[in-house]
Amino acid sequence: MDIYVGNLPYDVSDSDLQQLFEKYGTVASARVVMDRATGRAKGFGFVEMNDRAEAEKAIAATNGADMNGRPLRVNESQPKPPRSEGGGGYRGGNSRGGGGGRW
Image (cartoon, rainbow, N blue to C red; front, top):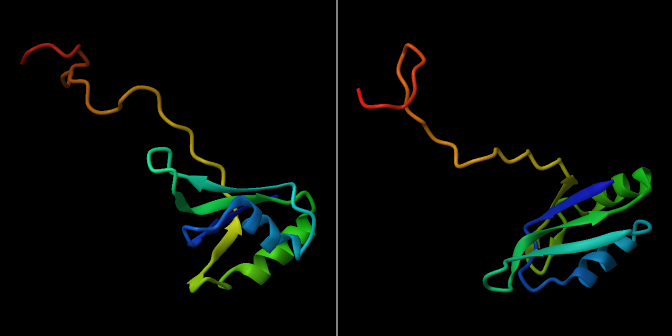
């Protein structure tokens, strides 16, 4: 089960996150999301635990828990919605279904 962990202190490392969740079971992976431009943590991360019961116990125990003065927001991770292709936006056209020429 993938677990989202939000409102993390900015100085938390992957190993800190792993140690927090290992109290409740086996952690397959723990990753703090980093900003590519600054190299600084973005304040959230993900933990993967293979045993659902252990993961649910970890979520219940850590959601709202204080970590360096910040209350953690912890829940089951939701899949990221797919990105649309292209830039989006309005491409023109008219009410009769024609192309994007001048009006």
